[in-house]
Image (cartoon, rainbow, N blue to C red):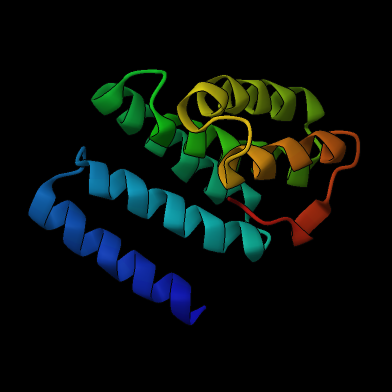
Length: 130
């Protein structure tokens, strides 16, 4: 709860100083979504990640690693809610971005590949994002 309060405070400050569409705001949305997912609040986590996805796509285009990160996090949210179809869609988007950007041996790519197993088993509220 303390971490959530601090991230919400930072988000408010960054939105005020930098504007609602700044890339740092998108990063803060992802940070807050990670905390909320760990607390079991999948709905707000997903809403924040969808906002981050919009900002990252707008700023960097569809194939940027930041967009891949948000898809990776959305995979975790969808796994936590048991929505395997959407988890698979986000997973496929993340792999499409990560593989050429980082290569098959990079830790990010390997971590993402581990989610293939989880696509058959929803993790419930104990899921972790990114």
